[in-house]
Image: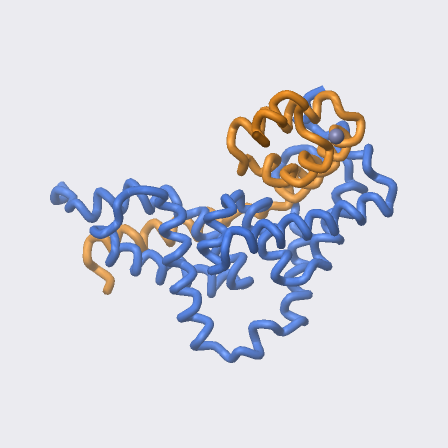
Length: 187
Length: 88
Ligand SMILES: [Zn+2]
């Protein structure tokens, strides 16, 4: 038999535990490495637990994203700055990403997808990061802003410009209408 | 005044293009969303343009990597131990 849960435990179960997967995905976007991502999530959890009694219960994900940003700043400070923006690391990661299989849903239009993937991989790191947070990890603009530590307007302008770049590549390949019959698209 | 103008004449293509991305991300207010949707239904330029972006978003979302269930399990265990005070 386990002892009754404290208020903090109850709040943590309610607000934080359901966000574990999102936290991990976001950490992976920030760290670009699975071991660091796990450390970052654990650090975020520790900080969140220390702060849970002062949390008012509104927008738990945005609250967690702010905590993760602070934890990440701390983590980055401990590392050699050079290593972080090493273009080769970035490149490796893009390749990994491109080779990863998506969910089981049928890829109806492989050419369209491969152009999108290639265009995504060539975006600058700042642009790729917002696309990853919003389009792949389904964060809101505000949540993405909180975790990166920039105003919402910056998230919007980076994201919208990034998508325009991808859209231009689609146009250059003449693929505008080729995605039109993707699964799930209302006919 | 602006609001009355919009309501009567609907949104222009430029206005729609300006908010299209936010609209597709569900980040506009409901009134704007409604106005954009009704413009997209009838506009031969914005409608197809919007579809291209929808497909780009779908394509990107399909690239989302699965999270290793073992990692989630590790994080859940970590959380359990932490809330029981076994980690500081
Ligand atoms: Zn139009």
